[in-house]
Image (cartoon, rainbow, N blue to C red; front, side, top):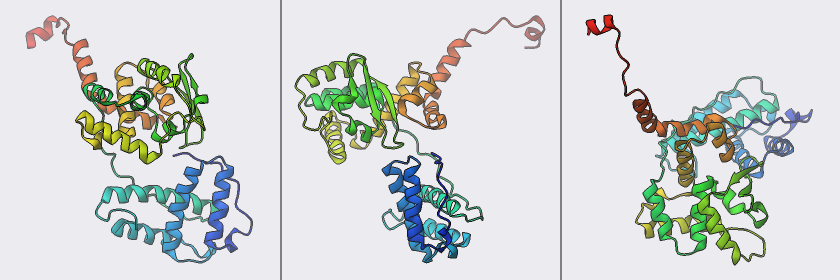
Length: 307
């Protein structure tokens, strides 16, 4: 998780109401470079805690309030979550407890606030080469093709894809400049052979008032992918931007791309996040190992006699 260097709180912070303190904290978060998406996430988590504890002022909050809040949410869940989805509840509380700890630490609460452990990561789903081909063949127009090609050859997140403009594209240099909504940073991804062909054709008739490359909303993108999945005879649940991102990452490693290079392309802050894809390659690594060690060396005379 990204750590922000926050400016210190106002000297009278203990006298403020919790809600006023929250606004001060979020302002400090913004000034440290946090994106609006990050600020929104912090607001949601900390607001949930403030509503639960029912305290009016900062000086009234104790670590016991945090413990009661965590226990209640683990047992009963959140208003917007599915009550029986234990993993979703635990994952939400994991992040919310991180946000609350940061808030209370910034306020000067001396007692250490523990974090709810994140649930074990669900197994990562990817598409096979055959399924990718089916998706491409099911495309109805150049926009369908471009969406699949970009996602499968760059590993872009959905919001990054939808934020691309014509100015972000360097077709001659085969580069795309990406602004990450997750961390508010920029990086470069590269235009693969399929994307180059489709993008060249797509740009011939490109006309957009705002310059956006993919003229869709977030929900519009999902609906288009679901429709493509049905046309391709695939399970719509398996065709989502993040699964195409997983597919790109796994294929990149299979083809020999170094892990740090993949980390840079995917925009991961921590290489541990990228390492999750390594377990998907276990069978490939095993085959490579077996091929390398398939020829047994000649055993020594003494060892031969013992066997």
